[in-house]
Image (tube, rainbow, N blue to C red):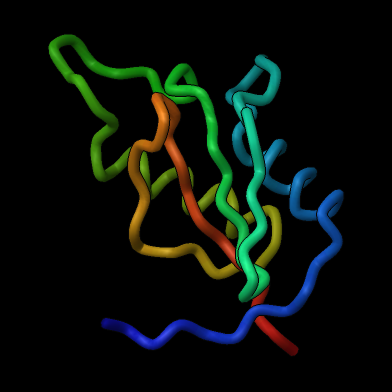
Length: 102
């Protein structure tokens, strides 16, 4: 397993705002449903499947769509670490992120 960096403690409203902005498709409100905080100070953003526009016959987002979402997070804050793992939980999609320690 890859070694994870240390994460700094970031106020919940800051992380929530970042996730909400990243998960707002063009011209629509945020698809963020819930933001969880873990003991190591990283976050899990749970969001509506409606964030992704799936191609005909597709049942899940493509690797390219996930990579584009990761890039959106990084553009909002260059100090964000995005976990490689992402997926589905309780009928929602999730992406994990943390803020690099100083």
